[in-house]
Image (cartoon, rainbow, N blue to C red; front, top):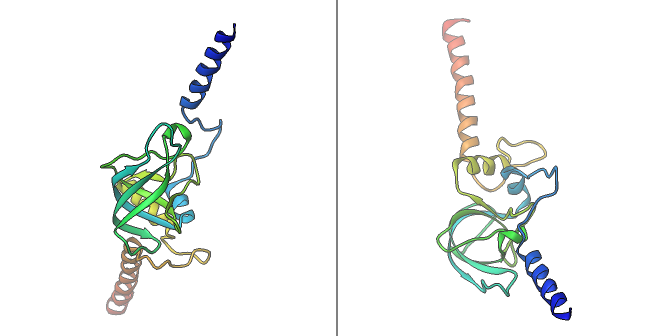
Length: 176
């Protein structure tokens, strides 16, 4: 009987540990724009190494080779980030060779979780558009212009002013 109890306890202990992360019913996922607004550091990087990645270690570190900084300030091109874990723990899992968008806290560098497994996103044009939205593109009174140059907004604003100027000059010359 004692052996049966120990066996069952062992099975349920390991089963509970290996279950996947499941959001609560009705969970509303944060958008890339929301994640960008909340994170102090947003960057595009490639994972070049992981450390302490064992079944006994809950979280592990990843060394990132920074390709582009979208939000925040960073002087290094190679940084070590803590806070990654198996996705079954509702955290983000990364592997050597992954080229992703990372949402991080600074001082020290740490994966930021404002939603389930939200420290990492796929590097795509849709993600980039979400980042631009999160950087307040276009800018509003409650979202001042960040230090990051938002080329998409600048182009749109320049095009709008160009159109207005051309319309005005057409009116002047044509006599509308």
